[in-house]
Image (cartoon, rainbow, N blue to C red):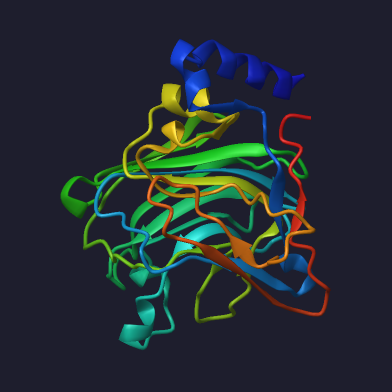
Length: 275
């Protein structure tokens, strides 16, 4: 019932022109990660995900066991700490969008400071993400000129938290990982579940914009302003099972899947977002 009300709410926000931007509830496969089983299943993007200022991250997530007392990363950029030879990766992380060890949706940006507080922005939901249920998540970061100001977090199109930039400088990285946070302590932060419709925009998306397109599989017109768009619609019979096409307007951030673990990978499964 609650999910049906969410679809109705999204329909109410849908503008007349939205249908021109994509196809309603036309989702194919989703990426599947099995991090909790000792596997490392993740997608590595190219080097050209350019986010010089404002940006918004959106995705549909399905978490196997979000309160399992481990961290499950949705998407992150965190390759700068290698330059500082530190065992504390968070201060040198551009961002990490994750479900934390309490099952809360979490987003942080490092500020390059070890003390007194290593996060420029830290936003978290107050309630855990539901287990084994498709949930839409988004974070909209205002960063004019590259310096972050505020971040607003949404779950199913509703604001759940916001935070303002504290101090220090943004640690801008380039390479992006889906289902992996590359930290130096234990390297265990991989997604356990499914991820679909990952979109990164070069703008701050509003609540109305998020609701109007969250159930759309975007077409070329609808991808205007996207820096990266992974639909994860890889067919299990496709010749290349490791290639993830970027459907953003530029289309230059092809992703590649990596697997390391004891359980044989099954990267793609029907998303069933609208079921």
